[in-house]
Image (cartoon, rainbow, N blue to C red; front, side, top):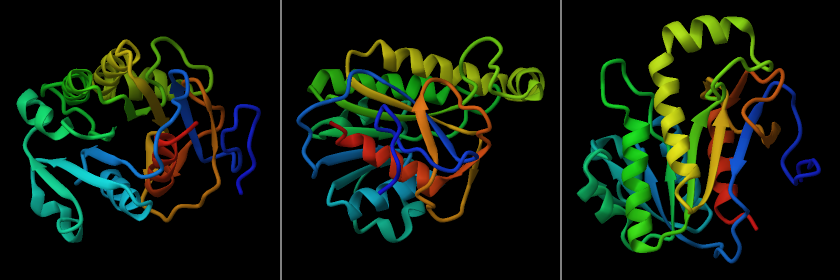
Length: 231
């Protein structure tokens, strides 16, 4: 078993980190759930869908391009459409027990997909009484200087190169916090790797952790799945 800190969060290798921000921990969630994965064809999303199936969950995937599901296509219930389409999202959320949101970074001059897409998810969850929501965000979203991150991140990466991405994620997080749902925001470092899950990382509440630089997508997926049934 992984070592735990005083909050019960995994605590290991200093350069592999996850930041956690959540509403009061949910109670009474079943170990086997009907889970919607929004963004299931992305690199992290496919790992989430595969991992959820491995844990005994039933998985619904909301995707624009179902052919990108590959071998998962026969193992999930697929809803084809755009997360920016409220009607499609409503159909996907209806009947689910929980939702995992792993949308990609917004493109410059394109619609803020995380903010608008997640808001569609939240409204549908409220409509159908679905309570559990886990979303993927990024370290550095917090406005103002983050002392845990190098100055180059604040002045060049966040402002000049990826300002539109952080604005999108900040708006998404605000909607999640105000939703009244049982929510968890997982903030991963910007450097996500494609290596296997190590099972060793630091995680704690807040926006960023000192020294955190990278983590594998497989570890992020496992951690998000852990949050589904957290009690």
